Length: 156
Image (tube, rainbow, N blue to C red; front, top):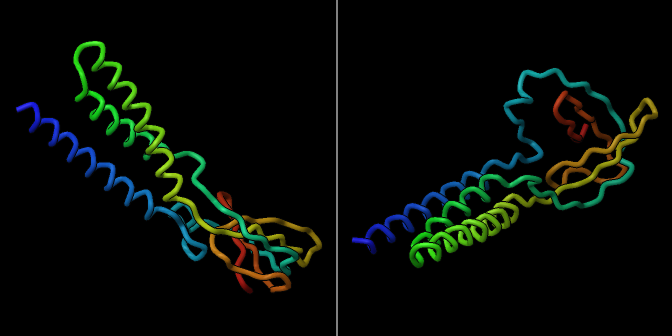
């Protein structure tokens, strides 16, 4: 009976982590995608020329989904080891190790190539925008869309 509970807990945990990982991997917005918070929001449009553009690596700053899912899985697996205080220690150690591992996995899944783009606007101001994708090159004429939540650079 105890083995069946262990395997059902492990199966459920692996399924949950896999589902959460797929969801996290699908949530990254590309350079042509708008988030719901950007829809029907007025944006200031300015034009200019790209002065510099260099490749950057973007990564999720906070990875709560992976950390929580990993900690849950690690805690469940750790709880299956030992008895008494040993079981409690294994549960805590499993949760900590799982949280660290889940965080690392989510960071790897949300990594994205991007660009830091410096634009000299027609009015003489210079702005820098970092965004996903390899979108523009030096000397290109672009427009900068600036809204309350984010800005983006597009070919004009």
